[in-house]
View 1 (cartoon, rainbow, N blue to C red):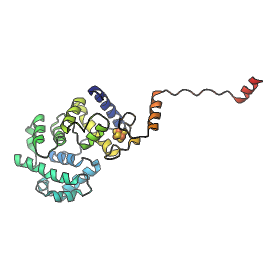
View 2 (cartoon, rainbow, N blue to C red):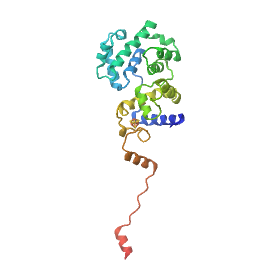
View 3 (cartoon, protein in one colour):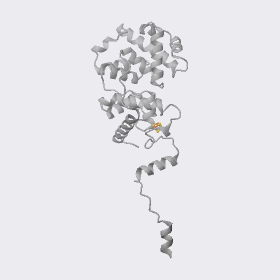
View 4 (cartoon, rainbow, N blue to C red):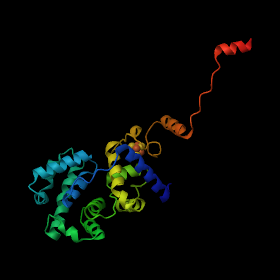
Length: 257
Ligand code: SF4
């Protein structure tokens, strides 16, 4: 079992390998606090493309975010599409969250965030019903600059397979606390983005595509044939020896005579 310091080292190894593969994290795609929340909820178990397209469909279908707030989950689910990942759950949570904030601040602009501190903002959203800790963490990180590493199902799955987190025994809030201790504030967004990127590309829901994964040489869950794995380890451990020189056949015969 890994101790905390080992996990920090593994996480850094993961970050470097994924950065090499996927490059720098792009800037956050949206600016308005409500859109941060919507995108965070939509992106769980969906690719970035699916989440952006779904957000676009919501923008086009509803008059404004207040219209979305008062809409029925059924209509929202239809706009998201029945094939959209966890569409029923997301269609229920979105208006519920918007409505709870509206009832407290009578606003869909959410300018109240300007006066709230980092800790206060996170605590406010964590207390709302049906709002998971990762949503509160995203608002705190992207809207008021708090140090937060959101852990949704994707991040939990990826870092769980890598044995940095243990989703079977740790709660979402506990996993976030571990990562916030392990990752510097300046790298929080990058680590989260890279884990999500791997989760949508290779470490997918169901059977992960470990053969193509840049982390498969040290991932404890890598599902690749043991022979390939052993060969990889051997190659990494031993510097290759120069091949022994063969005596030319003619010279060998001469010697025997
Ligand atoms: S090796 Fe497989 S299980 Fe491990 S992180 Fe990569 S895709 Fe996921």
